[in-house]
Amino acid sequence: MKRAYIYAILAALLVASAAAQETETKVGLDERPGAMLPLELEFVDSHCDTLTLREMIDKPTLILMVYYECPDICAPLMAEVAALVRRIDLDYGTDYQIISISFDPDEGCELAASKKPNYTRIIKDEAPESAWRFLTGDSASIAKLADAIGFRYQRVGEDFNHPGLMTVVSDRGKIARYLLGVTFLPFDVKMAIVEASENRSLPTVSRVLAFCYSYDPEGRGYTLNFTRIMGVFIVAALGVFATFVILVSRKRKGNPEKK
Image (cartoon, rainbow, N blue to C red):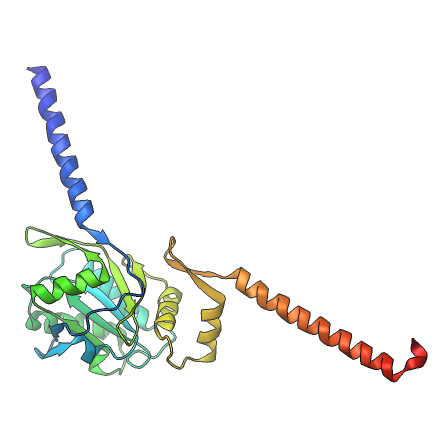
């Protein structure tokens, strides 16, 4: 009897382990930097108007894949992003925008409209109403967008297992950066927006930051690029040295008695 009991426990553990591994393979992120979003996809905003992604994405955009009745990380994720807006030295609604998209096809535009003020009131900014859209959609559009982003999730009863994620895309719908988790450094978000700006006109400070910092895919953050900075210093030093040599040479030519 004891042996049968032990076997039963081992069998249960094996089943639980297999189930956990299956969930892990179905939930996560397949990063696809440089990929284009399918901009023809249609979603419904909090006014219950149907719009394509192409109509909405006209500037660098922070995309949050969430669902509005999430009991876990979605609310903290959106609250964190709302708080970040006040800490990023860029014009919210002009330099960038935010789009929250529910991946639960059972959620509708009325629910999106009821959730939106919970986060926009944190910002306390006079940005246009379209600066942060709360969208819902059908299962086909959601699945295509999630696949394009590489966002993998799994329904478990009435809820979902899913990663916390911010996807930063350009004004053309090109994926620039992924930032994982539910908390973010303002500098990392700002740099991701700057990179997503591509050919857009940027302030001089932002161009300097983009030159001096590089994205670390392992740490999923930005680090100072010492090699690039040292290269600039070396070139500058050589320029100063060459200028000094030329000036000394000219001075000696003008004063031949000092040779």
